[in-house]
Image (cartoon, rainbow, N blue to C red; front, side, top):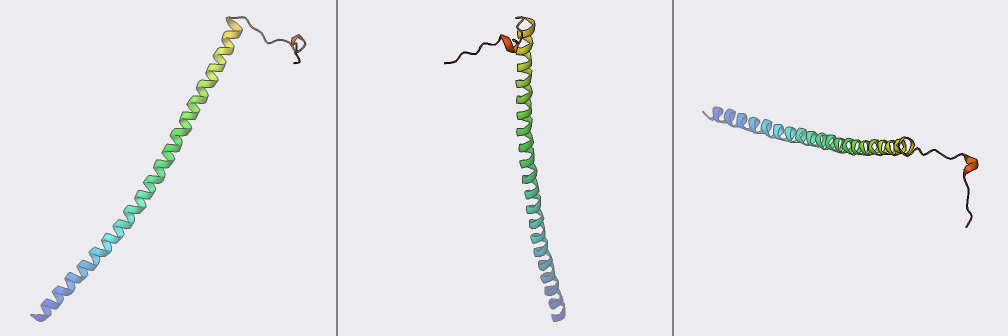
Length: 90
């Protein structure tokens, strides 16, 4: 009977030890996954910033092109020749 108690206590101790190691291991894995999630979220934020900058740049380029097109076609403006430009000195 005493041997059975010793074996039972030994088994419970081993189960406790294995479960403690499992908790530590899964906590470590959880931290690694959390760090990777944070890294991916930072990359996503940077991609969104770059996307916004690209959209703004496209809008600005289209606006300049639209203004130049309107000046040439609707107002019939032309770029003056170099010899037609008069420079005024203060």
